[in-house]
Image: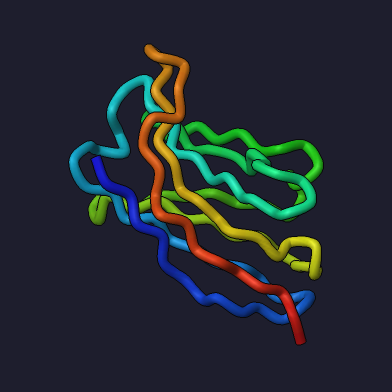
Length: 119
């Protein structure tokens, strides 16, 4: 299974951060999988943002819920993250990850993409 993030590396404050994850080797509609976005900052470490499940249900980090939207395109086997009204504190390395309910693990990770919020 391989995951690859894509999207702009620089976003201005108050704008929307948009990233897409392209998946190969598994279907994003596979039962009991959770297609997840995680970010890492030097100060906070790893931070779970949210997921879209194989069934299409979503869940988000409560502190980011009002600004976050995760969607999918099953025809392309991709899922996407939108984070609205970004601030400099949203600067991080963003990862797309597969979660497996059976193993309770985040078992496959993309390489990560640096996103900087700056004017």
